[in-house]
Length: 298
Length: 298
Image 1 (tube, rainbow over the protein chains, first blue to last red):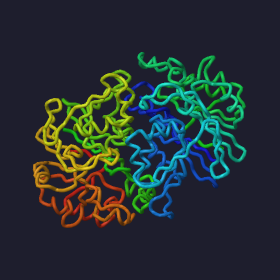
Image 2 (tube, rainbow over the protein chains, first blue to last red):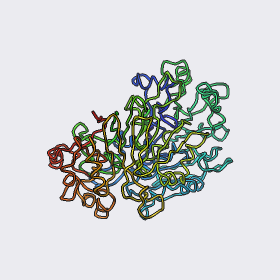
Image 3 (cartoon, chains in turn red, yellow):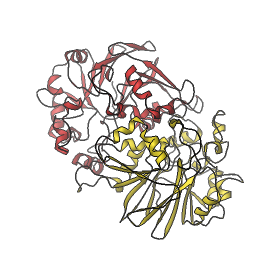
């Protein structure tokens, strides 16, 4: 299986449009040092199954143009796409807005839980994907239940506790609101979890079985947002275990079996974005990597 | 008044994500010759009034980062924006999706007709702009009725016949669905009309009074889309007077008084995108220019 990160920033991207913090500032002034990042996005593919996206970020148009394997093929008619399907891990705008950029009457297949589908179908903008018959095809997926893609990739939605985004107007946790993805193909296992609200024994056990794990790297510390704006919440209260501390992901996953451990979904406030920082050094010394746009599993 | 084009492509941008036509192909292979374009977007500003956007394209994050005058200011606190307001000319996704990228609890002021506001407020995603008090402030505007921005810019919504986008689920024309914008400041008059369904005497008279006009350059000919895909509609039937022909914009506006005549909102199918084409030469010889991303009025 081929797996590629097309974006590694949390929602808003890096730099963030209205942020003049020292990290955003550096990414504008010294982009060769503190690299800008597109919003979290991944693809995977195999010769037999074709190419799939995990989520559809608001930056998807630029992610398509920057990666030739996502371009339409000139020998297949004027309008076409190599994208066979899109697997949604939540209904968050940062994960779904890109669907609205994949219009132009192109047939799309979207894999989602029933709850995520209902949340999106309640939105009027989605009607732009339903203008002609078979433009948008939904495939229902279930937490913990594997499904096959063209026979040679197995995809298992990893259940994670979570709730629908604010815009859905629905409170309370559901096992259908937020997922990770476990991919298995050609004897390789990879876990993709951009939002990790807690490292449960079940999740740890999945990570342990994998060759590569992509783990929520949104925040370095629980109080990181507070330091930019005292009115903002703690990392854990919005569903993200931070990297640092005794109960952070680095400590909790210190002995996990995966050969490659990569942080993704990095918020513009996270000091690891500066490779000169002590925090960056700590991550690398602990055997982790900070995901980069364009990184491929090999 | 300062006026700048931040994007000059019709909806979908150029190249378009699923299009392998010869123009899109060229923009990917020879971008220095056939230049890629971001989706239609403009800004204007004055020292007294500050900076305003006309619409909010899906590419707005990249348009902000590419134009330093849109960056937050590091001496004004960590979170801020120079954007004083956003004037909406329609509820089309290509003009409004960018609003959803201007989140992060930043106060926004949006100028729109009551109909456009209602259409957007019916959309669940917009709730992400209404999470804290005063995050989203609406200012109602009326076709044909001038309003002042900080005393030194006068903005007049130009009424154009049109209907709401498909997703609104409402049929029929309304004078509130689609507007142009007439800007007046420091003795300069500029008309901005990315969608022109007909060149009425009233519109012609506005153009005649202007120093610079930005005119719908979506299509070269009425049948242009048909040639890519026979199932697609004629240019005029979807609200765009084409450039060419006896009843095209070039002929109809041949003797208009404006000193600068610029085509904007150019679709990926329009042959003028290739500067080697006969159509491009025709446009230039007729005294028009093809708008470029980054072009400024001077």
